[in-house]
Picture 1: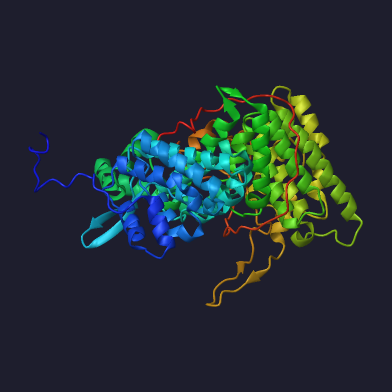
Picture 2: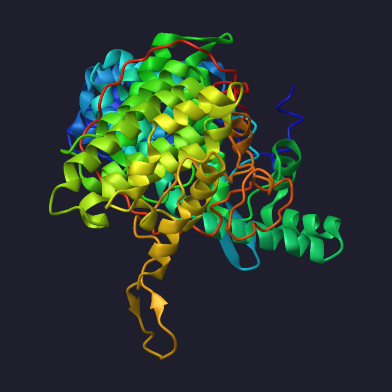
Length: 615
């Protein structure tokens, strides 16, 4: 017999012995004040070596007396919910889900506890890694059962939502409280955000709140990694690897520091970011782009209604979180990417921004930010046809002329950012757009293009008493002056020289020395669609993005400073060094406008799989 050949000393006992009575009898004894079997039951349920058959037997007994599991037995129910059901046999999973459905149906008081149990499994299990005498807590990235475990968790949530219709009201606060700290590993954040977005597929009523939660946390990462810091760390990392003269050794050191997953990610998806916060943000942006793609496209075809619904949700989150956040570099590209799917989406987004810009009821600081978004979007979105760009200019430029008409005869007709901030921001948006798009306007029919540019009457704007050239960024002003000089639209250099001769407000250093200008960027200029710096997720944006092409001396004679030569891998930007990034801060603003979608015109984009994404 097998028992006869069994090594009794070195083999643990088979789990066939069960102490105490049935669950029903144990609960009855507890009601009479006898807690001995009750405590024994909890102890047996927490046995780390518990077998599948035992779990099934316990769950079946608890299902039969679920109506007796009132609030008094909260600790016992918590122990039952903590049973190790993930990674077990299908029979255990089936029995556990059946117990969940019975419990939330009969005892809704345990709804929050059940939801917390499921959500707690949205990230990889934590393991202790011992280095010397120090225990380091980390996530278990090598768990092969992770995809199946996540599937089962979502199955459990769907079971609960089926039996308790108001589940979403209790689920959202738990999702917020359970969100990992933003300094956690990229892997932990990736798993949690992926699972949050997956919830919105079968509980669509939560999508707006989930997107708000995810994008809000991503914004915190974004403003914690300023553009200048990312560029500096990338440059230092590249110089360090090249300076050692042994690139293989450099990569080997990185593998030791970052672990085995880094090497695979570098070979499969591209090099990791040198900036640790940017690396986390790069991972999350990839997850968000994949989600947007899979929601909007079904079997390779754009589903217009689903895309419209997602657009409205993203615009609502944009109004509440993204727009009031100064100096975010990457999160706003979620809308940029979505708008590339169809021209009607891009036009609806521009119309939405235009309504905010021209509304006197909106705060001036938001109107200035919106102007930056309009100019940056028109300049950088390669998927925008020139007809759309001209249509936006036909709205912006007449609005500037009307503003000048309303101010020229008044007592406030002088250069003052505090009084005319939205006007100056709109002027800079027009100048910035023309810098990037002037070739497209005149291309094909030079005579017609020049006639259009002359019809904008830019000279009146430049020569007005409000003097926008004095306020705009010097890089924008100089390049705009060079382009308008080339087409003989307006001669800006006289005004620029006059502005330069004016005495600028100065302050002296407390330590002595020469005086320095107090403010070289009075508009606090911010171009939200400046070059995208994140490496892996940037592959999605690259085919949609209009990079800056430095004009040759024969095309434009500009007194601008020479631009530093960079490698082909770097993005050229004539604003390099001219656009100071302030500290990011998140504020709130009232709700959004609902824009209507028009003009179907699909634009291709790289395929990304979200739901099938491996973990």
